[in-house]
Length: 148
Image (cartoon, rainbow, N blue to C red; front, side, top):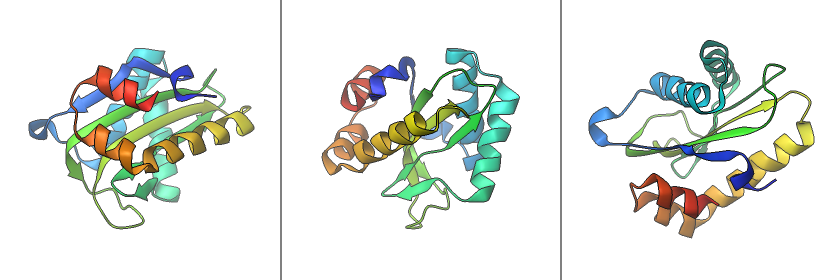
């Protein structure tokens, strides 16, 4: 499954420095975007992200985080991308702050598709060229074209 199949243009957001959230607020923002764009339940999506983060951080290093959750409440895989102008602490494996965040929600019955999608996003975001492009733009349309 390609990123463009589960990432809506409306789910790509740039957060300017003056609105920099905490980690918890960022997770809530990801859930809010999922609620507004895809119709997911805000509170249960936020709780699912928090629960996943408590198990282990989804900060994968290089300034990237992939908060994700699965539930029977979700009908299909959906993605949210947030580019932060000011990086935030995220308990990443390399201890570096995060500025590129790709959130994902998936149904419990989509294990193979979900894992392939998640690993595809991780591969794309680990590309140095992709990171440079993402960090050099503030326009959601440009961000979307880089990711897809």
